[in-house]
Length: 105
Image (cartoon, one colour):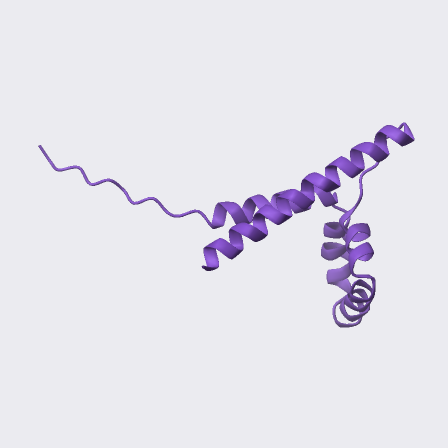
């Protein structure tokens, strides 16, 4: 049951990554230049209050982590991040194959 939920979540993330890629492509075509939506902008659009609270809490508790690690991760393209996470979840939800035992001749 857990494998089904993880695979479904992976497929949703893949679909979201593809949709973000389409949105970025249409913005790039309409604006005559490359436009890539960063992860921070996508998360701020979906969860504005939580992103603000997350930033304030992380800056207070560990400002060096915010400046170096989290800020760099939030600059990653939204489509690439969602597609990568979705692919990772789908790969992790695969059944492991058993090795085939051949009899010795």
